Amino acid sequence: MRVIKTAASMSAACRAVPRPLGLAPTMGSLHQGHLALTRRARRENATVAVSVFVNPTQFDRGADYGAYPRNFDLDLSKLDEEGVDLVFAPPEDEMFPPGFNTWVEVSGLSQGLEGERRPGHFKGVATVVAKLLNVAGPDRAYFGQKDGQQLAVVRALVRDLNLPVEIVSIPTVRESDGLAMSSRNALLSGPERRAAAVIHRSLVAAKGLWDAGERGGEPLRAESRRVLAGDPGVSRVDYVSVADPDTLCELDVVNDGAMVSTAVWIGETRLIDNLLLGPGP
Image (cartoon, rainbow, N blue to C red):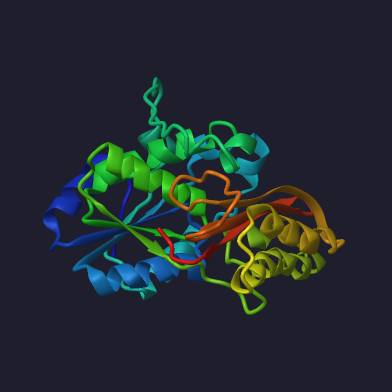
């Protein structure tokens, strides 16, 4: 496994390896959800690359960026065990050097849900993803369904800019109690970790109504909110959404499926999750 620090060296390495090449972009602090990306990439590609870069431009609070979990040596050990070929781990000034002032924005999809609560978040995401795809030039890039809005933004970015890469989505990997695996879970105390399972239960409750025949968007949202409101471990709910998984427009009537998503504060830690109703995008 080669660990590469500069964009020029990464581009050269990616041009030289056997194709197809699969890329899994990450911010490190790797868990089984990330490793599911690398395993899928390993099955489908001759060469697997992973980027490990905590992108400062997608954080709306400096304190949040500073608190983001980091364990680079452990990450490398996990990636080596998974048979990853290339690891791109640039320093911040390699990706955003002094004077950097060029941004990629995906309008519409970036404005609601996470975009509304975290101004500039998806501008940072779209820009760094565009840079990573440009540097590595992969045939396929792998993203988790847990970040459902991010997945929609990345798909639109690739489509609108005619980037020659296939975006592959991986189902959310969960703990035994349903909590979506996330690097932020490490910030939870013991009682908070136990309380966080209510997030998945709230989504499952909405799905249960859907499976029973309910097609009204607001009743589905209300059922999810009801479950969250009943748990004292929830300190705040930013939103509950029932939206089209492609356009992210809120749905009054759910005929052909939807993405039920939520952002919930457990103590001082903000967690997101979603479930798809019906067929996914």
